[in-house]
Amino acid sequence: MTTPSDSVPLLERTLYLVNNAPRSITFAEMARQIDVSPSWVSAFAKDLIPDPGVRKVQALHDYLSGLQI
Image (cartoon, rainbow, N blue to C red; front, top):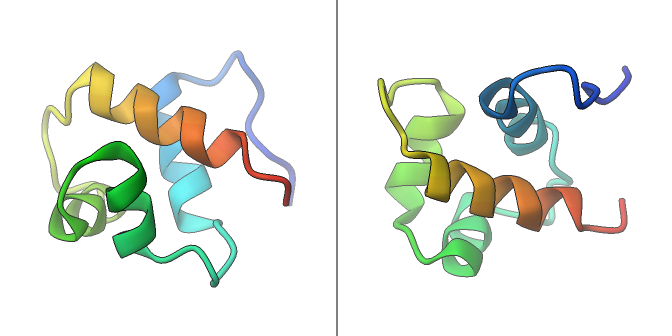
């Protein structure tokens, strides 16, 4: 499976990164890295947050896209 390109919206790219992160990167670790709760990351991963906020999504994207996978 390929990673979504920059032409794909940030929200969609970030959902992909969250749901395809290595198993060693838990929701708790993602949450710690961007200063949100693990339950927020879990709800985000399930696309349950109608308006997750661009700053949180950008922070999560930046963290996950910066990992050496």
